Amino acid sequence: MTGPVWYYAQGDTEKGPLTTAQIKALAAAGKIHGDDFVWKQGMESWVPAREASDLVLPEAAEAVEINT
Image (cartoon, rainbow, N blue to C red; front, side, top):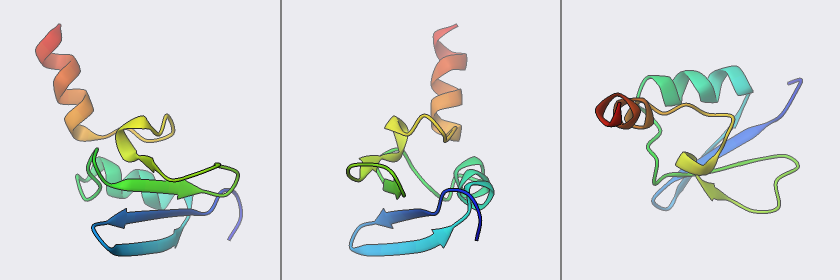
């Protein structure tokens, strides 16, 4: 696996390793939510997915549309 290796956690379940393309696809499909935690190699700690600048979550896009 080349590039960053991602993991995500939903509740007590951790999933991965995933490529950047795989985790972005899951986020875009709504399978990863803003309150799920994500981590990739090089990050100090797990963060909520909504705070991961590499990911675009559908709920974030909806919020932008509502506020414009």
